[in-house]
Length: 111
Length: 115
View 1 (cartoon, each protein chain N blue to C red):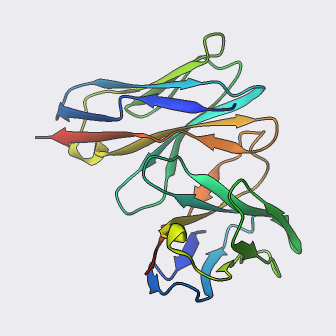
View 2: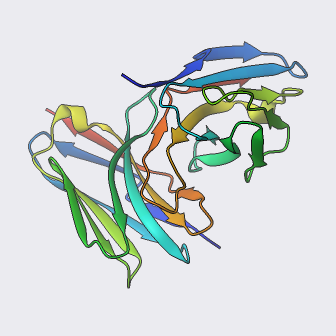
View 3: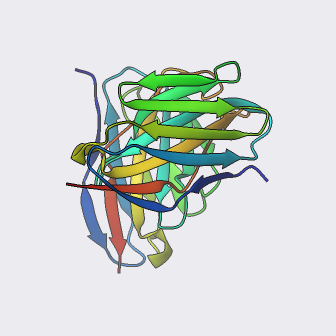
């Protein structure tokens, strides 16, 4: 069964600290992997999209990595800010053209 | 700027009523999607459309319908609302298929409560 699992479910960090969110998937065949940021009460917004051949991709203070062999991805947030408080959703696309969503990691950044 | 909007943002309805949620995009995208988001679940696909007059069922389509009469709009109808349909609904659009790295843009969501 195609699944996307994220860990941790929730995370609390202090402003200025770094953190890493994890994503494991069993989707096959794999097409691409996306990370979205969802603020409370808003729709998801894309951070990165990576294909099979890409190991890492950055978007400002957000850096995503992909290991297609182990079917794992991570999202690293550098020098966190209060505005980083949100849910981060890992999404995998298979060649059936459907996006399979993880349940997200809820990140809270405190001053 | 191009955008995708949803209305209403909040809706309370009674069991058995027909409800229609609106989605409008100005990206001129052919592909449009409806998802629901519930605690403990990732976003789940309800219906999708690849162009005018094209509609397809997603993984949780029972009790829902859509129609696509133009490029900009994909309304979602709950034929007879049930309490199990209490959820947050998101509309999305993209230029191309998810198998390629096309961005999928999401609306702000509609919170629906069925009492």
